[in-house]
Length: 246
Image (cartoon, rainbow, N blue to C red):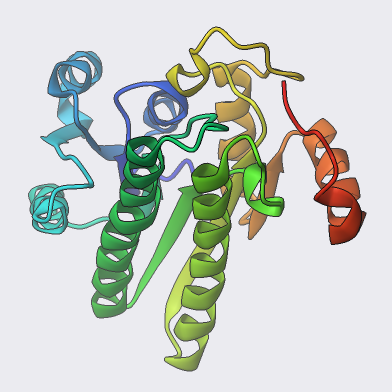
């Protein structure tokens, strides 16, 4: 991952995990295309390494986001990795309709739009690496965050399906599904208390290690690996009676 010829697009690089991963990859010599809704944030990061950073304002919910992604890739002269760190999530025990639908549109439709575009690009190129930030929330349906946990499970399954499709079509496309626990990002800036909260910088370092090691699924970090292991063992008849909340 330290080869200076490597090029990647990071979708969702304006803040949080995507921003920190971008800084680490830049330090390792990567050329990056940074994308997200807040162009002013992208310009700040570009100013630090202007010779190796390209930027494009992209909202993955827009119907033309796929075309903007391909335009960014073209500006860069091609990429080796697409890193998807764009998503939203809310606790929504009241099941507010707008919140649920916005989550679905971003983490479902927007995700599919961008990942599908990256897959088709790498299929034509002949090789590539698709890495996504999903979540441990995809392990079980969480009553306090129905759309969030459901869309994260969707993302896990979608990557599984694309990996199989890649194999069926004999493509050289690699996948990494990164599943963090609670991280100190704007996503959790809601005044609630979250257990085992992790710092963004530490999480980003573990993510880059997982990319270096070509891991297929990376749960971040070891404490959440243990949690997920036991979550999977809980029968549905017990899970539905559990009060999972902060």
